[in-house]
Length: 214
View 1 (cartoon, rainbow, N blue to C red):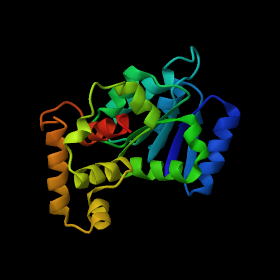
View 2 (cartoon, rainbow, N blue to C red):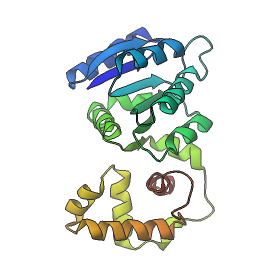
View 3 (tube, one colour):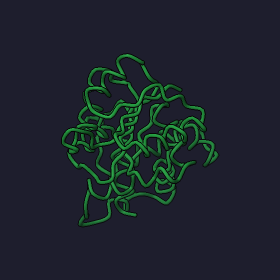
View 4 (cartoon, helix red, strand yellow):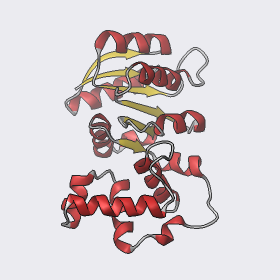
């Protein structure tokens, strides 16, 4: 798996490169600003890009803006944004993309190496990976718990979805058919008021609702 990394902190970039190399990834380029990040992706056609939210020259939002631009150019490019804080506007825009292949994690998650590498594989496979702190800040407090309408089994299915299980893994975990999984997920969407024409990815919004209430 070929990776382009956008990180201006030399030690963190070197540590990430070593971590990724040990997990079977190949870092083909390391960029330290938005324009060089975009240029590196265009030149190397990576399988995954990892970007810090803040890059030179202003250290505000250059990294996430570059990531969003790359997603506009390459809609299915797997993108992971790393941050020391949650940039609400851009996080919401990135994570509402129903095409998947996206993630937003706080940097302290990197130290949980196995979880971090698993997150990378899920993003490459088409999943959406969301840091719980991002969820909390995006949704904020709610006046009631929307999960109260779910049955115990639907709650278990939603919890497994939040842990990253796809439909096949859900079927195996609960020893049911994939058709049964589809029915449970459809019921969850309906009870959480997520109609088929809702903006964004309904699976992502369902998981956000679950994590916000935990």
